[in-house]
Image 1 (cartoon, rainbow, N blue to C red):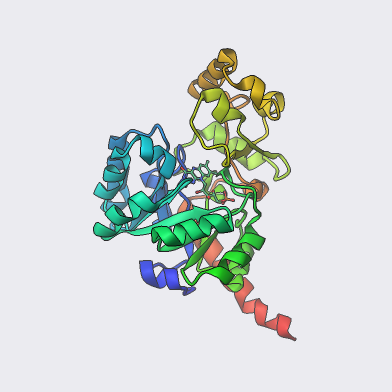
Image 2 (image 1 turned 90 degrees about the vertical axis):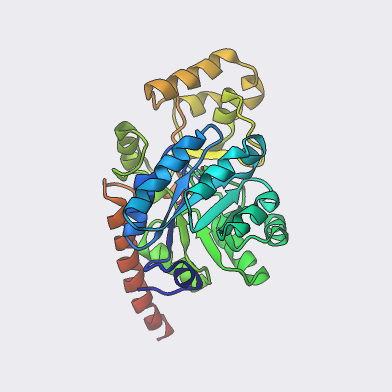
Amino acid sequence: MIKTALTRWFDLDVPVFGAPMAGVAGGELARAVSLGGGLGMIGVGSETPAEWIVEQGRIPAEADVSHGVGLMAWALELRPELLAAAIATEPVLVSVSFGDPEPFVGPLHDAGIAVATAVNSLADLDRAQTAGADVIVVQGTEAGGHTGQRATLPLLQEVLAATDRPVLAAGGVATGAGLAAVLVAGAAGAWIGTPFLSCPEATNSAAARELIRHAGGDRTVLTSAFDIAQGLPWPARWPGRALVNDFTETWHGREAELRGDTRAAEQVRRARADGDLANAPVYAGESVGLVTVEESATDVVRRLAADARTALEKAPRLLG
Ligand SMILES: Cc1cc2nc3c(=O)[nH]c(=O)nc-3n(C[C@H](O)[C@H](O)[C@H](O)COP(=O)(O)O)c2cc1C
């Protein structure tokens, strides 16, 4: 067992939070992460049906384990019903990221649910604290999916110096040694996404999981090309980190031309429907090169915990 403020708060064996990942993290992945001793989060995208959230929330509940739900602030402004659906699943934690969490903190606290929010800058931290967020997720640009421009480690150190609230490190933590590193830096745990992209409990396709296992960490790109092509109203300050593929090779850096290009829009729509991974987004972080085998999420969490423990046990030797 590794104890931190957040393992005590949420009664966890391992300071690992399975990051919410729209299109990948449903109830099965959340359950598997929680069974490993961490806290699994269900990822809700801007187009996720509200009923799906309720259905998925039953899966961890049936196994008698806790879960969290991850929402996006800009999507909640357009679809407030997603908040009620998330609350109905009785999660212990809800994250509201990518926008101002303030309007959603009150209703979540009234329902007895703790609130996390991802921050990508120090200005975001101010906003998160003013909003009353309980848990701060420092999300570095190394992270898979939509993220900011600052790197995890320097932002983590700055945030830790500026807040007393519990902080999770997100972006690039993919080994037990990496987990140990952020704990020693002062984080209360890690918010981990990419290492779960090859798990059988994920809702991505088997072909996507195979691609992840063969992808190298040098081959990701932070791009708005997919959002612009699909006409998604993602705020420009959060591009998405995805595997380099034919679509990003063609369009990344040519976003102005992409706007209103109906052929490109149709190409991405069809690629997503057909599972054409050369043209659909495959969001993944820089740690993707460390993901090489298919492994259950429960085992991933247990391995991270055991290896972090070994790393922490070795650390005192550094003192000579
Ligand atoms: C495929 C994918 C989908 C994601 N979807 C969401 C999401 O719906 N909501 C959210 O808050 N973060 C989302 N993220 C970001 C993660 O919550 C997290 O910050 C990130 O995965 C952590 O970095 P790592 O990928 O290096 O582990 C997503 C990440 C990935 C890889």
